[in-house]
Length: 450
Ligand code: PXG
Image (cartoon, rainbow, N blue to C red; front, side, top):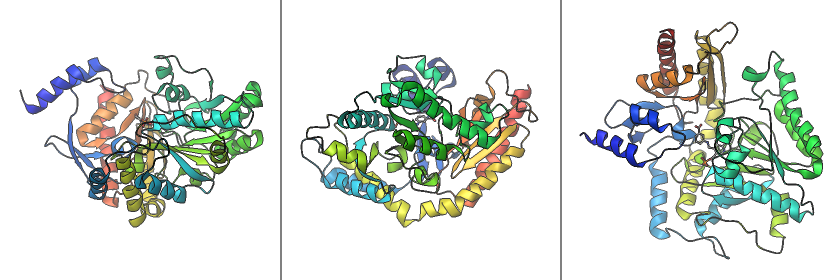
């Protein structure tokens, strides 16, 4: 048995994978990725595959970043672990907190660390509930979220999320309510874009009034939905959401697990959309995916209340602010700054990527191409004239497989194909991504015609 076959067989026997149909996996055999460099991943010694998903929306600076690996390694040698409970701390967590406060929107100056985005969202609920208790409004417990949002896989994270196929598989918490997503291509039913944006935003107001202002703690949303299919809201959406949160004094939560750290050409998407959240939940690209780390940035008005409570905020993880993860994050922030990456996304590689991506809209299989910053989506349709979908949901998975054949990772969300490529791509690499995507679409069209 070859080494690869052996790994595949052991994988199948002993490893339950996230979001995976294991019968299908056993038939297809898992793709074993053995190394990565720049914007490419490699299966054993095969041809390079252009990683259009930056790992899983996280390796924004690409692979082979020895600065981050070295920072982790020296931190492990100096102080591999100490906790941050019970009046203890350490330099990497302190320095990172200060650095995050420096780059975060003005009102956010404190941070709580977690190991993941899911835990960040759970933690946000703990803060929101505690805040309203301390403000003497203990009934304000409901969190409003959106259908087809993704906020993680812990019980609270998955409850916040609006993916019905996930809700079918567990019992969620009972204080979360969902409103519609701002998915103009999929759900506007012919409404003009700006009107649609306002109408879906105003569902928040209706929901607050229906539940009673005294019962609502917060509204959470991804500035751009990632796992839901790179849903870019109409320009009218976010200003209306901000107005409603201000008017009803509801805490606004930006889940920036995907959008944070430069993806839109701003450090945080909250700046891009000019919103003023009380919490920014982050993870993924904060360490360029090199170490597990997540967290919640907290507004001064909330942090002050929590700090002045006079007793413990009874929440924390053993690895909250793990020194090696914090060291990786500091090294990541250094690279973002020293290489002027966010400015380049904003003024150079972002616009170039978007201009090429929009050209995919000319392909006969594509009903819409949309892009923002370094995020892109294309909608696969059976009939370009009226955006009719393929009946059986096989277009997305077919396209994903064709992408791998031509050496490209694109993610299929139903029949929406999405990319979140590394922010550090060159123009030539963007051209390669475009050419491979077009080639995969041709192959997909041929496969679907059979
Ligand atoms: N919020 C958002 C907006 C996310 O995208 C999480 C929270 C949860 O983070 P953790 O670190 O707990 O996974 C995420 C994660 C996909 C995919 O298939 C997306 C995510 C994770 C795994 C797969 O697009 N996003």
